[in-house]
Image (tube, rainbow, N blue to C red; front, side, top):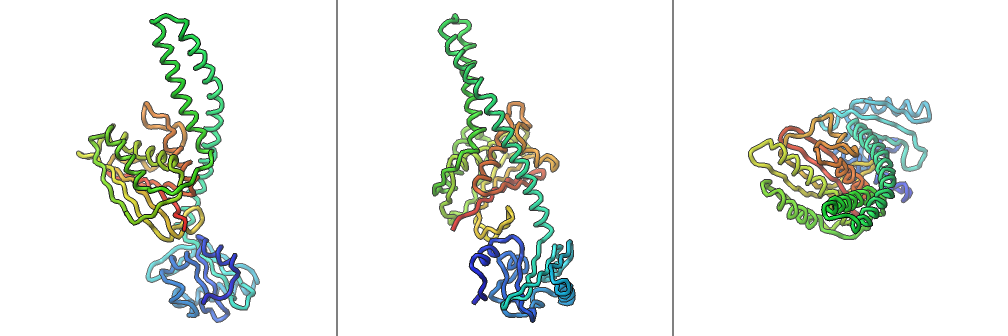
Length: 353
């Protein structure tokens, strides 16, 4: 039985991305949160009430830090220290805090450097996304009003001009309507998502069927985990997010093929205990879109989510920023890894219990 900690505190510890270990005065392990189980590659059930040396090999190092925290009666923190876990050296930020409780004497916290770097990357993306979102919203509002006037004036003129000029009027009306749809898409990320149960594979199959008609020369490969349950999501937003990413891959492959046969692979998996957005997610849907194109230069990867940045002459540079906005509305994240011959867009979405 887990020692009595307040239910609220327990829930918070369970969700933390930081690895937390609670010790009694004899340095026996009383609690590991799920993140600590991942870090130390062992379950609480196996180590409860056993010495910390079972998972933390350099016990003298630990005792010294604990003594420091006791002497100060406050938290002792050390950055970029190296600890050995099952013959693997990990670089972590390590914290010891004395804890005045009948069950727990010390709180140990570990944050891996890889995790610190990932958090910094996510924070940069969130800040950039907020700036992008504000820019797009302002841009859409500024264009929307005069656009309606242009279309209305063109419709009035259509009855007044001769046949030679009527084609130009039709073009003005058609392009005004296209721009109107574009403005609506810029404003739609700010609408509250309509969450319903959906089958992610049905969404992917609809996209595949649509794009297969236009890109018949591309081989679409499917590697689905059919055991994945229905997910709660906004169908239109998830569809549009994935469509934009996959359409981008199609355009990149056909404009400049890297291999003899262009291929795009759809992979779905269910993953457990994944950390992103500073939180431990117990179950996550992983959707990977993988193509065999030239790849994206490393210095360009973060730029692809900037609005109005496009590598295509006919592109608007809005597809990927919209995808990122829609996925963020679902508390998800998009990660991109690329090298010549393989570019992977990994979309992670929490699966609610």
